[in-house]
Amino acid sequence: MKSPYSVIREIAENDENIIAVVLYGSRANPSIKDQYQDYDILYIVSDVNQFDVSVFKAVKLIFIPSEHYPELFPAEKAF
Image 1 (cartoon, one colour):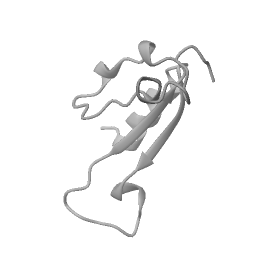
Image 2: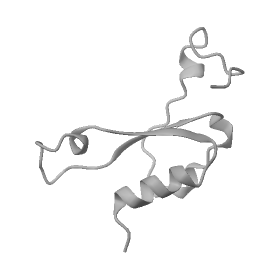
Image 3: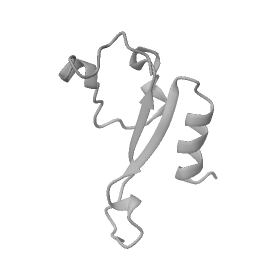
């Protein structure tokens, strides 16, 4: 069985649309240990319309900066 970190990394390595992966929250801090830790993951992508969230079992939040801050993140701008 693969570790969650391996799966997260494998998804990023196999998708050319993914630019970077960020682990944040309590699991990113090794000094914090509790029974409620989950995996807070941020995938940074070139084109959000090409990102397939169905590879995940439970997506809680999808944030698309260009929809909230179009002046800072023009949708047509590629990184």
